[in-house]
Amino acid sequence: LDEPLQKTFCFPPIREWDISQDIDHILETQSALAIDLGGTNLRVAIVSMRGKIVKKYSQANPKTYEARIELILKMCAEAVFDAVHLNCRILGVGVSTGGRVNPQEGVILHSTKLIQEWSSIDIRTPISDALHLPVWVDNDGNCAALAEKKFGHGKGVENFVTIITGTGIGGGIIQHNELIHGSTFCAAELGHIMVSLDGPECMCGSRGCIEAYASGMALQKEAKRLHDEELLEVEGMGDLKKAEFVSAIHLINAARLGNSKAEAVLRTGGMALGVGIVNILHVVNPSLVILSGVLATHYQAPVQQVIGQRALTSAQRIQVLTSDLEEPALLGAASMVLDYTTRR
Ligand code: ADP
Ligand code: BMX
Ligand code: MG
Ligand code: CA
Ligand code: ZN
Image (tube, rainbow, N blue to C red; front, top):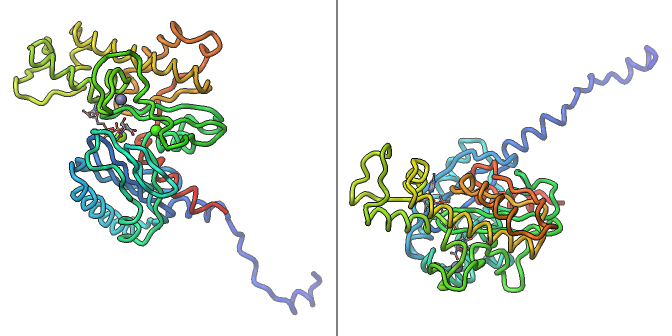
C-alpha cells in the first residue's frame, strides 16, 4: 500500500496464527472416560486424544451386578471430578468388557462364568443417565484391537488380529480396517478356539479352549496344583508358604529358575496358544498378530515357533509382535469415544 492508503486503513498487524498450537491444545484436553471390566479387575481411566492415560483407577471387579454398577458409577464420578482439575474435557464414556456385546444397543448379551451376573445387561443406560454423557460399549478383545489400530502396531495395517491375555484370553479381528462382530456378536472370541477334543475345562462350559490352557487363570490353577503337591518351590524363589496365594507369576518364576514341572505347564500353554493362532491364520489370513496383556512376552517365542512348525507355507511369513501399549483394552474403549465424537 502507498503511504496515504496505509494511513486510511490502519489495521493492527495480524497476529501470526499458529494452528499447531491450537491442535496441540485440543489433543491434550479433549478426553474420554474409559472403563475396562475383566475377570479380575475393574479399571477406569481418563484418556487424552493422543492416547495418553492421564489418570487411572483400579479395583477388584465385584462379583454381583449391583455392587459392580455401584462401583463403576462411583469410580466414574471420581474421575469426572478429577478431570476438571486436570484440565481434561470429557467427551464421552467408552466401556470395554468381557462378554458378547451388542455395540449398537450398548448391551452385554452374555458372559461366561468369568464375570458373574453379567448377561442381558444394558450398561449404556445407567452410565449415560448418571453422567449425562454418550456411552460406547464393546467386548474387551475388540477394544484391544481398536487400540492397536489407533495407537499401536496395527496403525495402517488393513488385516490384523490381536490376542490379549489376562484372567481369560480375549481376541479382536480387524478385517479391511474394520472390527468383525459376526452375526450374533460372537466373532473374535478367540480364547474359545478349541485345540483338543477333551482337554481342560473352560469357564465357558466347554473344554480344550486355548483359554483353559494358556490364560492367567489356567496358569494360576496349575501353579496352585503344583504348590499343593509341594512341587512349585525351587531354590532362589524365596519361601512359598503353604497357605500363600500362588499366581501365574510364581509359575513363571519357578520355570525361569529351572523347575521342570512349571516349564512343562508353560510349554503346553504356549503350544496351545500357538496352535490356536495357526487356526486363526488359516481362517482370516491376517498380515500381523499382536499379543498383549500380562503373558504376551512369555508367549511370543513359542507362538512364532509353532507357526513355523504347523502353519501352511502361505501363512508362515506373518509377523507376531508384542504390543507396546500400556493398557490396550482401556485405550480401545477411549478410542470409540474419541473417534465418534470428533467424526465429521
Ligand atoms: P482382567 O482379566 O481382569 O482384565 P488383568 O488383565 O489385569 O485382568 O489380568 C489379571 C490376571 O493376570 C490375573 O490372573 C493375575 O494373576 C495375572 N497377572 C497379573 N500380573 C501378572 C504378571 N506380571 N505375570 C503373569 N500374570 C500376571
Ligand atoms: C473370556 C470372555 C471374553 C473376554 C476374555 C478376556 C466373558 C465374560 N469373557 O473369554 O469375552 O474377552 O475372557 O477377558 O465372557 P479378561 O478377563 O481376561 O480381560
Ligand atoms: Mg482384561
Ligand atoms: Ca473379542
Ligand atoms: Zn472356552
